Length: 307
Image (cartoon, rainbow, N blue to C red; front, side, top):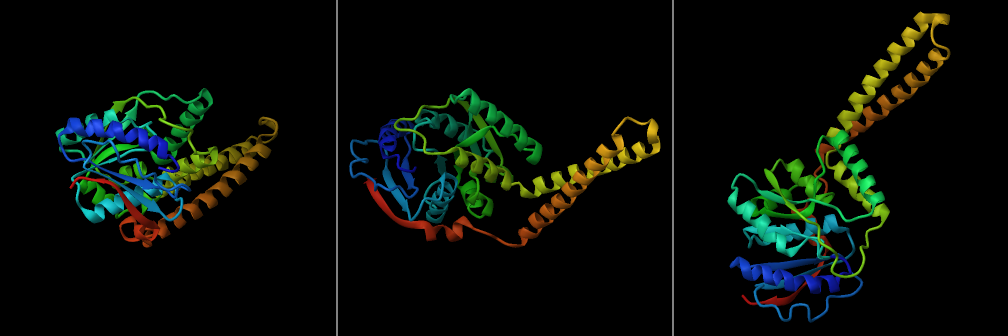
C-alpha cells in the first residue's frame, strides 16, 4: 500500500471478519511502499480474530510489484506461514473472496498458486479497449494470456521458489507463470476502492505492462527475431518477383518491395541484437529478492499481536 491508510483501516475489519470464519491463525503483513505519512496508531484497534497486524515500512517508494517482492522475501525469510495471500490494500481485492481462493488451494494439492480471475472490469470504455489491446500484444509477444492480477494465495513452497527469481522484482504474476509453478484461478468480481483514488498514472500503467512482458524477454526476443526473418525473406521474394515481371508488373511494385526489404532487414538486425542481449544477460543473477530485500526495509511496526 502507498498512502492508503484510510483504505487499509477499512480493509482490516473485513479481514478480521474473514479470519473469524476460517478458524485458523491469520496474520496481516502490510508493506508500506514509502508513504509520506506514517502509519496511524489506531489501525489495529477493535480487531478480534486477526492474530497479528504488522506494517513494514520501506525506505523509498519502489512500486507495488517490487513491494510485493520485498514482502514475500521477508515472509520467506521468517518461514512462519504455510499459506500466503497477496492482495492490494485499497479494497479492490475483496477480503470475502479469500476463503474461495484458500479453499481451492487446500483442496487441489496439484497447484501451488491460486489467482483471482476477474469476471468483469469497472473501468472506462477507453481503458478497457486499451487493456484488450495490451492483452493481444502480450499474447503475441509472450504466448501467455493475461487474465489475472496480484490477488492470489500461494503455498510456502511457491513463496520459497519465487523469492529466488530475479523476475519477481519486475512483476509478480508474470514471475509465477515463468516459474512453471502449477497454478489455477477462481472467478471473482472486482471490488471498489474503500477510500480515495488510485495513485497509478498512465505512465505507471504502461510501465507495469512492459514489466510483465520483460519477464519473458527471451521469448519476446526469439519471436521478434523469427518474425523479422520471415518478413525479410518475404520482402526479398517480392523484390525478386517484381524484377522478373519488369515493366509488365504492377506500377511501383519494385520500389515498394525495396522499401519493405530495407525495413525488414533493419528489423532483423535490431531483433537479433535484442535477442542476443537478452540471452547474454542470463549469466547474471540480477536482483535476488531473498538476498537483496533487506536494503529497502526501514523498519517494522506492530499494531496488534496476540501471540
